[in-house]
Amino acid sequence: MNKPLIDVLAGVRQAPPPVWMMRQAGRYLPEYRAVRDKAGSFLNLCFNPDMAAEVTLQPIRRFGFDAAILFSDILVIPHALGQTVSFVEGEGPRLDPLTTGAALKALPRQCDDTILQPIYETVRRVKAELPEGVTLIGFCGAPWTVATYMVAGQGTPDQAPAKRLAAADPEAFAGLIDTLVEASADYLVNQLDAGAECLQIFDTWAGSLPPEDFERWCVAPTARLVKMVRAKRPGTRIIGFPRGAGRSIPHYVDATGVDAVSLETAIDRQFAREQIQCRVPVQGNLDPEALRTGGETLDRAVDEVLAAFAGGPFIFNLGHGILPDTPVEHVERMLARVRR
Ligand code: 1CP
Image 1 (cartoon, protein in one colour):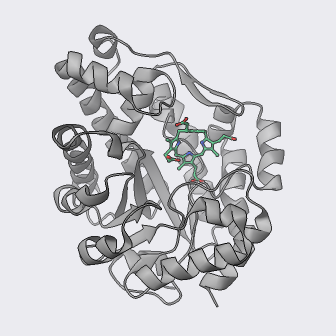
Image 2 (cartoon, rainbow, N blue to C red):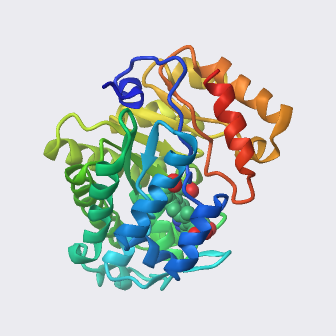
């Protein structure tokens, strides 16, 4: 049976477009909260294949999305590189910050693979249970975005700590980025071997860098990552999400070789259609805030996204992750409207 999402990634428009949501397994679902409470910590959930497979499949069962995304986090890579990582309820990730070039140079070059094995087991279990036609997406964080958390020790509004360290000791920072490229390539290849059918690279903070640094810390490392994965597993379909990169996205596409791009909410739609969708299939763009609001605001927002992009190869999705206080009925309403 054909998989609509894979067909779109190959450049073939589908009507209606395939649909999934970033962060579709998460706090807005009561069944997720039940498993999350049982797991204790967030990392326990990520590293327990029974529970991680269960929450990956929950939104597929409830809504019938066209894709499942492995339940994990971009910060399992720093964890497997030996950095202390935890998640504070209601606040987000906390890592032991790496504030000096010396601290970066002291990091191991490779992940402790035994730590990541349970994640590959999750992929195998999800794959075995996935309904026909549903695509399993593997993922990692882009080197720059992961590095911002490793240096700052938490999420930051402006990524200043990472920028500062990259400026103060570019050689050590380049070493960190290289380590992340190699570790992420291995991690993605292992996800493919366990059953992932395509990949997404999340570069949440791609938009915070000036052009030269965007080139050095986002575009070039992502290009190397894509190339390394395809050298080992030729033909792998990869979606890039350079959030905030706006008018630099056409260049990002050409330079990295990604097969598709996920679009944030704020992008100029005419630009995205004429300069991005003419190059590669696109995904995303629905405002998570409109989904939370629901009603006619949501209907209008869905229609605007469809009008802008559904004429070409397109995957319906949000411009960023679903907000935790989004009512489940709004997701049902969105799906009904996309698929009507
Ligand atoms: O149980 C909880 O409430 C924890 C919340 C949560 C969840 C559900 C975190 C903590 N991570 C996740 C899962 C997750 N994270 C997935 C699973 C698949 C999915 O359903 O989409 C994915 C793909 C991610 C990716 C991720 N983690 C990104 C990139 C995408 C994005 O949202 O920008 C980033 C930046 C992270 C770091 C992270 N992990 C968790 C939080 C709250 C954050 C952001 C923290 C911050 O910047 O302050």
